[in-house]
Image (cartoon, rainbow, N blue to C red; front, side):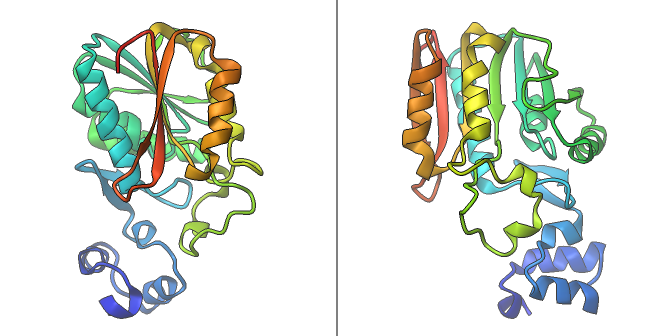
Length: 248
């Protein structure tokens, strides 16, 4: 069955344990339905994260974004951090940062009420004290003194072809206009306004949008910054880090 479905055996065993390998579930898997939704949770940075069709499934690429960000935070000796996790979805990024860092205040926002309900369940399940807010990017964000803004925003181009299993995930959390940068443009445009003089912006991005994103940085950011496009573990450009008034 493992070979036929092209699904790791450990995930099949997990599904069998929590939800059963019923004919209905097997049929869904044969039609590329994500097994994580059938299981009801997935592992992210050592945490069990509840997922359903209202949120993206956390992936290794986003784990690596979090890992890189934690290293930059520790290297630059931030204290009493205020972090904003935009487009939080399941809450995996913000909750992991709250779990891994000391003396940190984490705010997590999303435009989707349904996604925020999943994030709330994860917050309660993991017993982590974070603030959840319904907001279309910065629309309802009142604080303007964050040390870190981090996001895995929608960044898929409208005409981009995606694997069949990904198309079961919420399109609102995937697609971001013809060039895949609509959300990223708003984030970069508002980055300085919502952060302290010393701060970091960390984004997961589409490799194909690198030049467009560089243009956005040059267009909108006026303060002393350094920025870095960084690769994931497969060697693809996947992340943007902007460092404001600080060493990298």
